[in-house]
Image 1: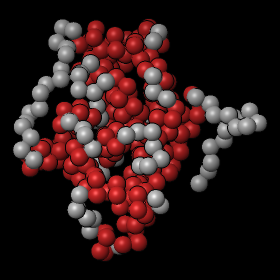
Image 2: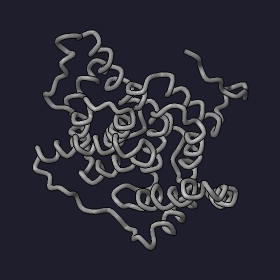
Image 3: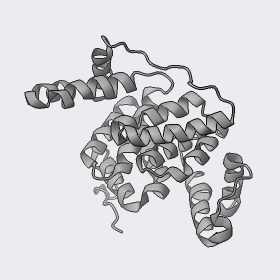
Length: 264
């Protein structure tokens, strides 16, 4: 099937009869968008439809692009994501994009759940207590990044330890990463997409490329996650993140020379 037919098929499966206003006002633009996303990217991906939609939701949230959040929450449900998985993907955004965009997206998704008579709140996925959150978070952090965490803690100036050690280990990894509902591989892949969407975070992107490798995610998955992000964040941020992937996991051409990132 060509990309026109594939796009129509995939969009029916994800969105049913819902149509974009652009189809009547700007049909050429709508066709370019839809055939790229659903006729090419979606069908060339190693990520299944559920993961594609979870990636899309976190990228929209990190980019503060609210108009399509409800549409893609519906699509995620149709693709097989559970309400818990959708909520956990949005919670994963908070340490990286901040609480306000995460809260905004959660509110929009709650509207979808209420329209579908999905009970709120969804079942809690928390596994930590006030007493355990730092130690549990530190254990997860070390399981992803290894001995570098001890080195980071040892080298952090005393007046910065709250941010660099306490808040990072207890909140980001203790309160968030220890939650059930999504496995560690999924959380780390979503984190990579969130940070890549923000732009200007190349150091953190490289760290989480390595984190993805350490938890068992392949370079192919990272590249396909970036392809899924591309229509929402554009080429510059996508290529910057791709450069980070290649810096951590070098790509070799047939002449065994390091692959060079293209310039647009």
